[in-house]
Amino acid sequence: DRDVTGVQTCALPIYRKAVTDGCDFVVGPLGRDQVSALFGQAEVSVPILALNRSAKPAPPGSESFSLAPEDEGVAAANRLLRRHLQRVIVFASRDESATRALAAFREAYAQRGGSIAAEAVVADNGPNFGPLLKDTLAKAGDQYDAVFLALKAPAARLLATQLPTNGYRAVPRIATSLILSGGGNARLDQELDGIEYPDLAWLLHPVNGLPDASTLGSHLPSARGGGARLFAFGADAYRLSA
Image (tube, rainbow, N blue to C red):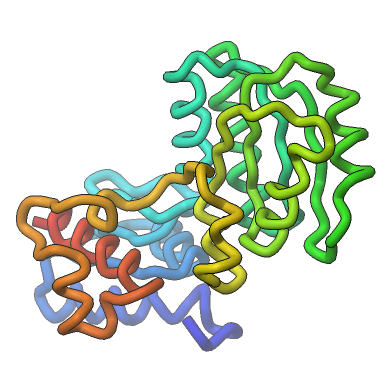
């Protein structure tokens, strides 16, 4: 993945070698361009479980799954709609993950009767979001049930603390996991208390067939911190391949 110039083609010879060597199933690759390169082949003789999305459809017998921002946008929309929260104010950054999550959120939310009361792009430079918050609230009026955030932690902290002082009611707040980015700080992150975001089940409660996340992390460095999500992703890939 680090060889940018060869990113679209380096997966092909590896896949072909695996086929020649007699493999009957391939897991990967992880890079989005590499997945597209494999899925774009004229013939895929050995099925693939790709670990990212692709602009090209999966060949017959192959599949892909990923930790995609789009899935988080849909999960957030479903969470709001299950709670009958059908008008939302949106704050999002220009980050690619935020943009992708928000596009999926809009589509899923609208399909089931939800509507966006007002929407604003938030710059990460802060620190005073007062004018932006007041302008956004004026557009929404009092017709909103929740707030959706597609922001990294630094901007989310600042914005969350300024919502009440700029006239926002205490409504449910839903975010994407982008809110975990930008440096964790136990003291500062208290400002994010009460904001819900989607996460992997294994990080929240025991999962059959896997050791407890905290226990495993104490023995396996690659399953700690941010690596825990990739570990859970790999465990899912193992189960799906079986």
